[in-house]
Image (tube, rainbow, N blue to C red):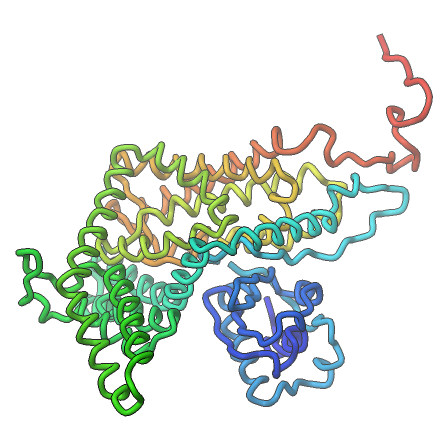
Length: 536
């Protein structure tokens, strides 16, 4: 655990180029997100060496430092305070330019987190005991870090595609909403628990109101963020999207059917704000300054608002209904198979950055059903990853540096932040990444099987996974049963990921010392000359 967020912030600031290089500061659940004037002034290696830093992410417009939940908020506040003070820290902070201040502990992540360009925070190599030579260099943490960096560079080049640019924009719209989704989701869970236990009946209506208010108005926040992301005026985006949730739309008829407040949900709000942004830009490019002040906002609201009412809300409502119907059918009809496929493919989706496309789907399901049934299944991929890392730790017992890396990243993996394990251990090694997917598939099949049997497991908010998802669980069978199924899926993912990696994920002889530690000489099989005869 980071004991002094100010010391950590003071260590990070000079490594990202100092106050003059920082344009903007924000944070999501696990990451400090920085807008930088000059990316070349960042010292990546020193940043990864700062205690408590789990990794760094290069994502186009922002530079992200993975710190973990809870920690990131305190460090961000201290970072902003340093910027306001002109970057002045303590004498020790300024002198310790490599960022080695304070203690760090891995925290937990989302799913969601984020994209495939994560550079792992790799622990420094530890010199083995005298007389012991570690496994070949390809298996050391330093070598794996280099291979992980190469994979990151190749992936960054692949990420420069129109589809992935759109997906990153979608993530930038919804990621800032995750803290509110988590908070309201937990409050909703508490309200549901009190209702089922028949406790505090006078308090539960208030808790229900608190948990539901944000979801009732989420379209406004989506519209605001969408306009900002696409270069429009945020408040106009929010104004256009607000019509989606306005109760008065019940009096409007489109395609012969009366509209319903909230029809289309976040998808309708997203489309409305994008349309409003293009209308606004068109007006500003053609209207003189004297008319721009009055006509641009008026035409933006009028044109995009009418198109939203008579076209987008109806179309987005049909899409949202289809998503909910498909998710229900998928799990109730082919639950085990669907869980196996989703759980097995999620790590590759994270590696490619394509998991960001699922954020609006999760949000749509939460709007419709009160929870998303997909997130608990996808969280099983992290369980397979943890099991695979544990197997590598056991098998490569003589590779001290790699084991140190796994020890530092494993707590984060248990709480849902998988990037350090993916890019520091399993993906550079190759086969452990595949066996981790096998573990995720097994855990997903376990949860999907129970969905077929009538015990559905859902999450009332998106963001956390692993053990951090327990407070957000919801389902028709009650919290205890739901938690039992989810916990069973995690244990299945751990076990299968471990066993698959232990027996099939590493080459034969991996982890054996090259020299005999006790005699300080090569093993008989490695000595020059003829091998000793086998005993009969």
